[in-house]
Each structure stands twice: as C-alpha cells, then as structure tokens.
Image (cartoon, rainbow, N blue to C red):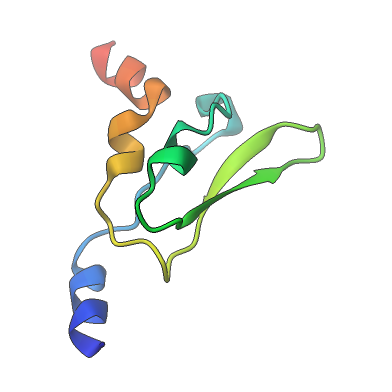
Length: 76
C-alpha cells in the first residue's frame, strides 16, 4: 500500500478547470475515470462541475485527455 501512495505523490492531481467558465459540465471526465474518482457536484446556480477525490485518483489523466474544453484551449 505504501508503494502506491509514493507513486501517486510523484504526479500532480489533474486540474480540470480553474474557473467555472472553463467547464461545460458535460460529464465526460466523470464517465471516463477508471477509478470512479470524479463526482459531479451541483453549484448554487444549478450547474454541475467535476470534483476529484484525491485518494481515489491514480493520475492517469484520462479526464484531461477527454475534456473538450482542454482540447479547445490547446488548439488556440
């Protein structure tokens, strides 16, 4: 178990968005996560945003790879 924790600490936790405007709430990241480390939370305005459970996340970055908004930002 300790080796797993050391591996996790070597990679940064994915940042799905820094501002709410950078997320459309499509749930693609939630759907692709192989460890169910992402949950969708509703904000005060009724929009849903992903929240990563750091203890479940294995830092595979599939969530970032599937994110439409991240792809658009890279293409600009």
